[in-house]
Length: 265
Image 1 (spheres, helix red, strand yellow):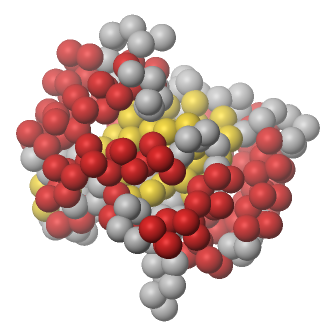
Image 2: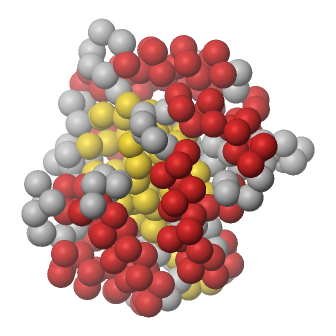
């Protein structure tokens, strides 16, 4: 298997971050175009509040290896899981769902995951695994600033982490990239039996400015090292919504993919 088969795009509706997070340019690149441009073969599709035509996106993803839809809101709308399962019947590359911002704070300042009873999460995963069509896996987003700081808090969160098939480790602010090796050691401790991936921002959302090519290349090199060591299985590139705007971090990712994408893993 080639490395690019283990690479994912964190896909958003085209133009979603025009004039946001410090980006003053206007992008038109779709998630599928982003996959083709970056040379990756899988995507997580995350509408981020946009009412999208899921079928149209699923049809555009036909040539990808794997597709996963965001479904955090299932605790309020259980039918979200039913939709993903029904779509999986028609689109054979739908392989999973992802819970974005699972441990982030809501508008009242409370961790979002606490609005989901653990029993509900267990039932959701059972439904995903045993649905009469095929097993769908569950992934969770976890930021490096959300663990490794308070042992009690980490212990309270552990049962939730254990319910997921996989966890994706992200670093929100580029200034925290130097902490990644230390954070990864915590990450391994908390995911002894859970699949792991890394997320890599190609725009510095946490600080509302361009990501640097140097930081992106360093992260990708580190993540590749861990994949080769069998300690993680993939990398998620964020996102298509600035990919056509001539930012240096995207150029760095393209160069890195040209060098490493066809390596056998």
